[in-house]
Length: 396
Ligand SMILES: Cc1ncc(COP(=O)(O)O)c(C=O)c1O
Image 1 (cartoon, helix red, strand yellow):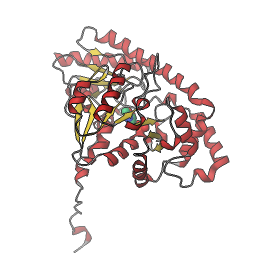
Image 2 (image 1 turned 30 degrees about the vertical axis):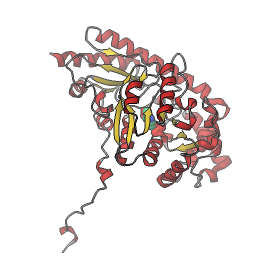
Image 3 (image 1 turned 180 degrees about the vertical axis):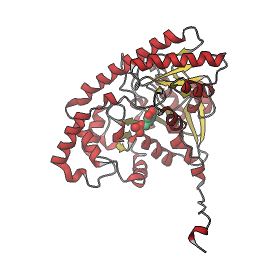
Image 4 (image 1 turned 45 degrees about the vertical axis):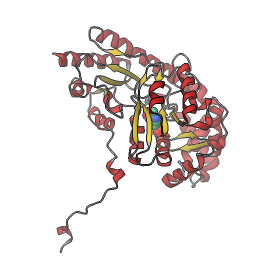
């Protein structure tokens, strides 16, 4: 028998592989990459904020002073000066020994899934929640339970009703992806207290917390109960996502297992990138840099709010006013399914993400997520006008 006559190899997939799905957003992004489309769909930070020249200088300094170590294998916990810088950045007393440098905070979610989820483990998430977390958790085959949430955060009654046996509650208290909303101080205090009483650990994901527009958000949940929380942070939104660097702060009785999972996953995050970031962070760079991102994103948010007000005021569309971050959440008029509207909007030259992508258990089909950070103010005007036109036509 010739090789060419043999049937193709049949790969027997693991059960967990069947749980892996392409990200709806990535599929949408393929469409929006068509030239001429104004995209409010992506979750990318604005490349205008990337400190390219600082990284060029840091790259040279690292190679000059520490080149061999930067190119060598290294400790799985992360580069010590970077762990120290992270601990010093956080608004509660953090021992650098509790900091684990990760390959993006997305890796943190993957490590949490591996360490904390068995098949059918009950895990609680907000409604709606970050799609990438659902993707990271899914292969471990959890029973994902959505907890009702409102503009102030998690609904405490619903949380208590669903808490029994939960491995953890996954929350994004600041400028949440996808809704842009922020948990109030009162809700944080009450949630922290209730989670302690019920014995439910909290996984707190905070990539956007530094990107506030008028005032910093309230203290993290982890600051209130470090033993009962794992905290995830990222350099993606304050420096650049291409670095793939994030971090976790984990309590002492969880840290070793996360570290072992990290070792198995990738040994360590890139030594070179960690040193470059530590170099860039020296001398309080973020204190100068992050305010420029805040100012840019605030003006972009304002441009989108103004465009929505102008173009949608006679349509029954509702939207929120996020106090930071990158996303705005809107609700289309009665009877419009945002998944059905999307191709019509793309035909008119504008894209968004249908909100239903972000619900663990089916969601409000009228909702959409709009990113206001990558389009220019002019494109925001044109794009929102095109979206309004698509809604009008769809209704007729
Ligand atoms: C809520 C949330 N968590 C985690 C991530 C992953 O970020 P990274 O892996 O770049 O740190 C993102 C990225 O958009 C996010 O929105």
